Image (cartoon, rainbow, N blue to C red):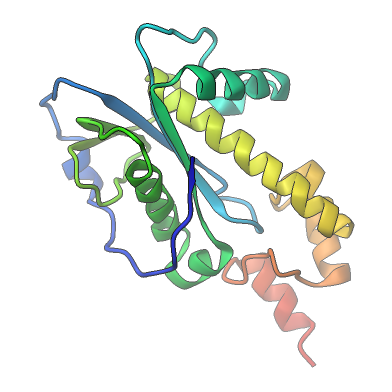
Length: 217
């Protein structure tokens, strides 16, 4: 269910004052969208879109950041089994460095919505910015703690990205991706200074860019 497409520049997201001003509602299928991985120094940014099935409620949904890893893993499997449909999508490190992290995040979100097997009548997106979509959409600040479908999307995106970091750790164990998941922890920054950047690092992010400049002959 993961959607990955070729790199291309995207139109910027709609301004937040337009998103948050939406006061209408549309009957039909509702999709929740969230992302994981905007802050790390390495790896893709991941987005997920989920349309839940009202006939199969999922207990324990919430903001993925406040759930334990074990609970997230359990809910990941349950969401995939019970949702009407879901899609996990990525924007690559190269797209992040080319477009910037905001536009790459919006691109991953759009890919996730476009990859849904069913077309939603409305999309609710966590945060205050919207990707360019072909269906009505609304941004909801802290939506991952307010809307079940967004919570489900946040869990799918978080677990998927954490698994990508575990795979990165197998290839580049010297950076400790299994522990910090790419975030700029002291251990990660120390490893960057010692070993330089690997292919998974985002060269447009200041700590990585600075290390590359320091190591330039």
